[in-house]
Image (cartoon, rainbow, N blue to C red; front, side, top):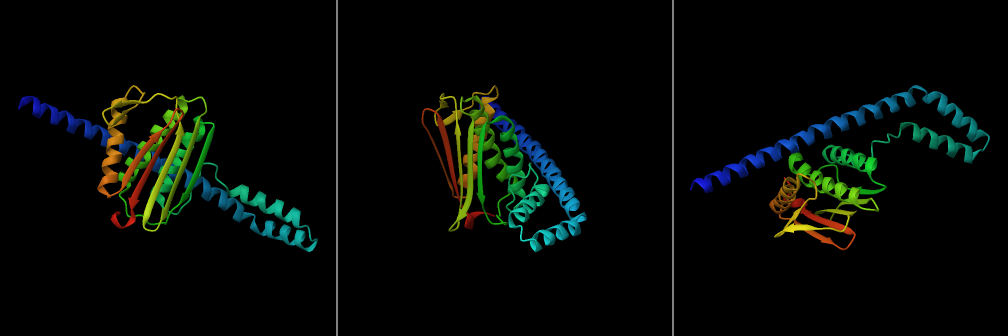
Length: 232
């Protein structure tokens, strides 16, 4: 009974530490998103300040029928308000925050990153559980791709016919460690990351969804499906 009690106590402590790690990550995510929003607002404000001058120049080019010059000028205006750290703008603040944080992280260490997101502005899923799913899967994918010769990450998230799909594909060094059905990370805290994957699976199952993991000699794929009707 003592062993049983100690085992469950350790599990509870482990879970509390994991939740603390997720909350810490959420703070970093919100901080990053606030910085992104602030930078974008400054760029928009700067463009708005000179808007009358820009409009006059566009009128001038239009009168001279210089379409190519107009296109070039408009491209420059667009570039002036584009924030290089704002990789995603779906209108869903929770998802935008997580993905902007993780994709910016991926871009700093990987060679090739592809992202495609098509989702509604409202998804009634708890932000903590959203961080568990996207944070864990992307963190593991980035870490694995970083160890590969070809450092590639592809992320796709979209909603269709009442379902939300998350597809993550990354390269890896070709070595998979498993303990039963649980994947073991190659990082020093590999046990924690394996625990994180199990938490992802639990959240997915709680929403009556499914998670599928496949891999070959150099590519690792994770596919998650969630029912929109079950998101709350």
